[in-house]
Length: 214
Image 1 (spheres, rainbow, N blue to C red):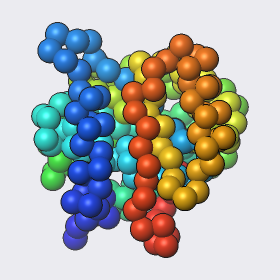
Image 2: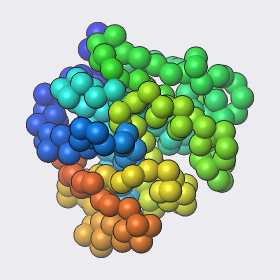
Image 3: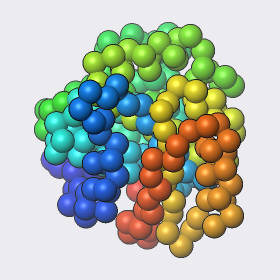
């Protein structure tokens, strides 16, 4: 059965082409770590991060790792048609080893995925603990590009705490929903951290459909 993300690629891939081509490291460039976030929940961050990861790995042949860190509302496994799988929360809670949670997809060679795992409330500061940092280091070790699918900036400080572990940020905005003031506030937070905004993309895909959201 086709995963929901695969079904959306033909409609969203073209809209993100300028973004995923820009995120690929140039020849001789060090590996790139990119954080995807939004000004507010429900913008479709997981969907866009998944599409970009897919396109980087399939069209540009970049070894790509995608990690979902929104443990409160995981959505990546559903988009990929994976069912219930263990992921980041299970690793951090000691229920699983990272090696058993790193997933490769038969239909997407070169793409490795770590979902958020078992849903639960986030623990303050857990994304900057040595254990969490080691997860990101391990995922990036064999990848050309590491994409981090993070919660919205308005949901608390967790996403901002990841700023020192990435090389740039992509902001996902929801057409007819994201207020201009909220978008400017999010951009200011990124720029204040000294990070470049590598792209800002409007997610216009079928707002009437109740897809899982970050």
